[in-house]
Amino acid sequence: MINVNELTHDYGHGRGVFEVSFDVDKGETLGFLGPNGAGKSTTMRHLMGFSKPQSGSATIDGLDCTRQSSEIMKRVGYLPGEVALPDGLTGAGFLKMMNELRGGGIDRRAQELLERFKLDPSGSVKRMSIGEKRKLAVAAAFMGDPEILLLDEPTSGLDPIMQEEFISLIKEEKQRGRTVLLSSHIFAEVEALCDRIAIIKDGRLVSTVDAAEIRHGLNNIITVGFENEKDFAEFGNGSFDFRLRDRSSLKCSVVVDDSDINRFIKAIKRFAIRSFEEHSVTLEEYFMHFYKSNKTFGGVSYA
Ligand SMILES: Nc1ncnc2c1ncn2[C@@H]1O[C@H](COP(=O)(O)OP(=O)(O)OP(=O)(O)O)[C@@H](O)[C@H]1O
Ligand SMILES: [Mg+2]
Image (cartoon, rainbow, N blue to C red; front, side, top):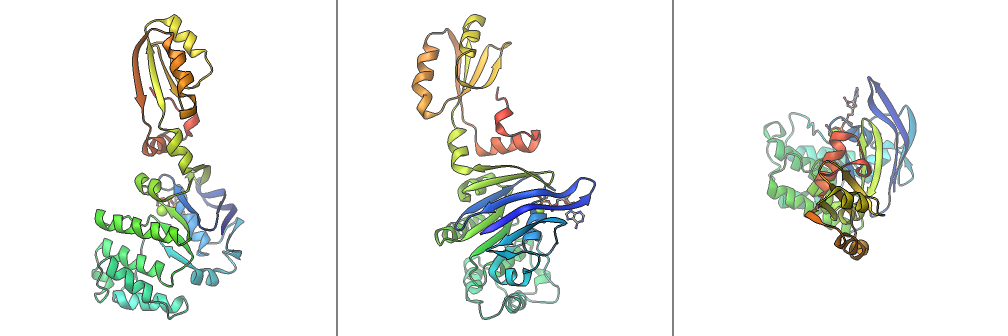
């Protein structure tokens, strides 16, 4: 449904997006994750046709994001990362304007959302709080019940109750088969909503991972400390998926998934063991490592 192909826009000094490629299937929610300045909003702006790629291309449901951007504006619900609302309008006035831009006659959904998010649209947008502006932008993005949603840090600025409300809204939209691209820094949100996660850093896509795989594979790191070097070395030469073998502390960390647990227990029974720790790696730790170290999980040591 969304296709980004070698998208490149170089703003100089290493800034911008470089050869970014990914797809979002119909009905899928792709999380778009990466540190500040990584290129998430830039990619989304290109998808909406607000910026033109220097090379590469992007399409949404077959429509070219640059050449057919007015068509895309009608079809896609976009929640910008930074909401800039025109001064001198009321909330209702803004929604009316957006409604007209998107073809008109479609404001019932916006009305429902204003009620759901408890926002009175009669006040001037200039006087709205950050969260109120975000709520108005959410209503505008969902107006017309679009099949495709591009949501750039959708819950930033919302209070915890409204964040929860928003997460249930997206869950409902997922159930209705919507296609969603969602950028976020909130790992819990990504974990709750996304089917796959694309990781971007310094304008380049580093990897795309299956959310279920991460959740599963990361929960089973076991660190075993041995009494002596001989046992440490013998175990350390075995055929396990080692994350760490540290001779000074005589500790090995191993990824043990459910299918391998019996073999692992049999193996360690033969050795003199000083300590045993199960380390649950959360999605947050996984991504913090990535944010800090520019490495994917495979190369990271957990002591
Ligand atoms: N029009 C522009 N002119 C010059 N530089 C730009 C322009 N647009 C974006 N950039 C640069 O491109 C980089 C990516 O910015 P972008 O807003 O896409 O980051 P982001 O991943 O959305 O970050 P954040 O998490 O902070 O929202 C930044 O270094 C930014 O300064
Ligand atoms: Mg951004």
